[in-house]
Image 1 (tube, helix red, strand yellow):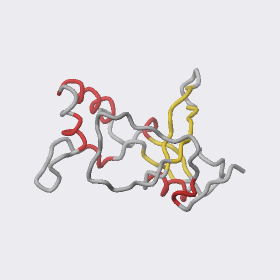
Image 2 (cartoon, rainbow, N blue to C red):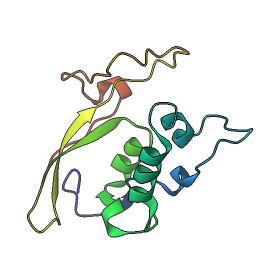
Image 3 (cartoon, rainbow, N blue to C red):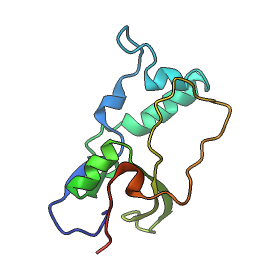
Length: 133
């Protein structure tokens, strides 16, 4: 649980139900999964999709507890969580927290450049903050 707040608590999905959409459509010609197929084989992308959605999105391993404000920050991609260590009983996952840079909404993305997350970012770039009680 992020921020160690006792309550209120929101349950947030790691992979939202909306990501289930497999195919492109006229309203969304480049769905997430069709874009992945531009870089990887159909079999590989299907394996990722099935690993995520074979049991649906309403399963414990696809949920995390967040405070309401943190849940909204997660929805808006203000931060990212990097898995670091899972407990032996697989009930607790330690993660590294990264504030993400504010999106510049550029029409161009260099897909050959590996993305990086600056280590010195804080919530100021989104005008928000989190406190560890």
